[in-house]
Length: 412
Ligand SMILES: Nc1ncnc2c1ncn2[C@@H]1O[C@H](COP(=O)(O)OP(=O)(O)O)[C@@H](O)[C@H]1O
Ligand SMILES: [Mg+2]
Image (tube, rainbow, N blue to C red):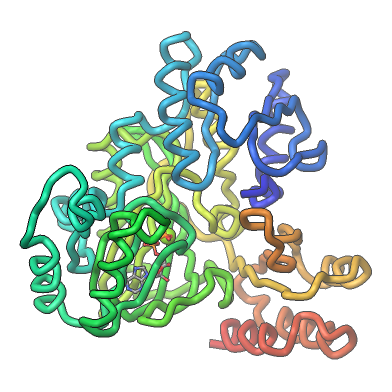
């Protein structure tokens, strides 16, 4: 993903390093990055860079320490392998060790880890595409075994590739016929053929949390609410994404947060993990634990006055970082404008509210419009709704549907 998703925290972290006389370098694949993205040394590497090549590039630059901030999971895995080389070269690297990263990039293994830790997970089973296709081993009962499992759990079900990210490849299976069609897809060689976790659909509020630190010292950032979960797949940015008070859920989350910190400690998590969950019936059902920075990091940093990128660089320098459950310092709200926002309108928005970032959202090279994150203190809800409503009336931005969601969120 584009480095701009880390705006403005990555730039602040680099400036803090510069102020301490430390040079920062960015080794990235994907989109080009400029000074405004990363005010330091920048090196663009091929998307297919191997862990060894990556480690060598970082070493050739003369790094004393390194931090992984790659998205999504396949890049985190590459970095975890590069970490093994870097650590050996005497360049300590803030990244979860490879064995733990390999478990966390795999949704089935993650489910088992959570279950063993006592965290609720959706009931499900693993569908192995090789076994379905008879590759390697012929297991005549395999397909029927999966059908029996599915019937036991009940429809609708979701199938999720064990390895993919950002909702890619997720399918709703409403009937046994859907399951059969999905299992047929596994016989081919295309992307359909990926092994998957097939699991129960959980209805509730989607949320996500970042945990940053190393064994013995973790900080849990505030919960981010990211939309509704149910049988219908929803685009990640379709709804408002926000951090703010939600007393009952916040209280209920404390225990889950402690269990998650213990799980991280047990696995040796080093750096950041991002946990996706569904809040339902007072519980937090864990969907996955991404062994990397999350997609809602900016939001939780904005709502808590923390900076995950600064925490990671402090860890790389052996400096202490905050631990425990971070307190929220206000609201942070993220929304997508499907039409590009005119610069004059962005300037007016900045005059009216505190804008954390406003930039184009690019995923896999495609533009999804402009993403905006604003913050406000508790007590500023009415004023914020009023000033945004005025902006909407004069400029049409934020769009009526977004405006409606912001008002109903802030007037609860
Ligand atoms: N068991 C489930 N019940 C309902 N919705 C789900 C479930 N699992 C995943 N989803 C939906 O799919 C999205 C992506 O799932 P997730 O497990 O986080 O995988 P990834 O983010 O790697 O694609 C979630 O944010 C949620 O909207
Ligand atoms: Mg996810």
